[in-house]
Length: 408
Image (cartoon, rainbow, N blue to C red; front, top):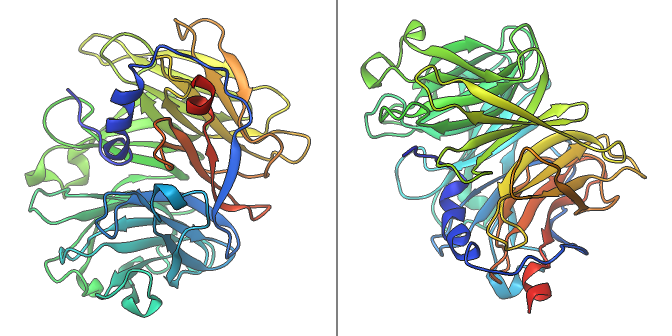
């Protein structure tokens, strides 16, 4: 059994509950709710429970606003209202913000990846007190990261197996890499962070940790959007003893070679035990990669074309939205200026190789949506869609799934 980290930890309980429902309503009229629209250029949503109440909180980097912010889930009964939020620190040209306890003090910190002219990794340390008090956060930079390249994305992982969390990160543009930061015991002394590059990178778009070959070590699954080696790949973890040796990490290709691949997601789209990978590809496709049952680990490729009345594909997510026990496929887009639509839902048939039906989630709301997260934010038993919008400054938003109300 493969082990997946990240959003799946927040969603697994909801999936098991939904699979029991016999009804499958047609999903129309998804209502948009605003979580936070206080700054400009909301760029991604990363989830974790910051305050220990068992509910998912959100970190978002606001690229044009130059800040990173945290939104605290207010409880299911208040989820449709704007959430209590705080600016954890300044982060010029921030592209990604992720929640992680870097110094193992029991309080969650936030790491911002900055591109543009800033080109630095910035850490917002929780300094005790209320997470909603801006004075409870202290911001420092990682000196060795400054000016290295345009940092795009990061995710936590104990790479060397020492029991302390490290940080896998990468960027885009000239001299950019995918690699990992060794976080020392004195984590807040960022001058002691050590960088281990693993691969040249044209444009790191999406990154997850997963045990791809079931050897007990977490590997790195990622998309490189641009450059001479674009596509969907995974780097095989050689184990903690050799984790700091670049040549020890073997690269394996999944597919989409030479294409402009965007964000990917993982999920089971059919009845076999294997997990498929779905990746958005500009200008108009979603690629589905199904692992073959052989030692060579080949991947069968399928395609879904996105209609011309939608923007260009940006991100995907796999989940059962209409409660019929089969996984559906939601996708977000950018370049979706009106009359184009921004977020669509492919509703599953009994076989992912045959035609899917398409429903609109957002209508003509927004122009540039980002990662789409299936999650039950209002506690009613169906999966809503969390995302953000960057151009029209809709901010951090979610679309309420009407499935439960339609099935009653």
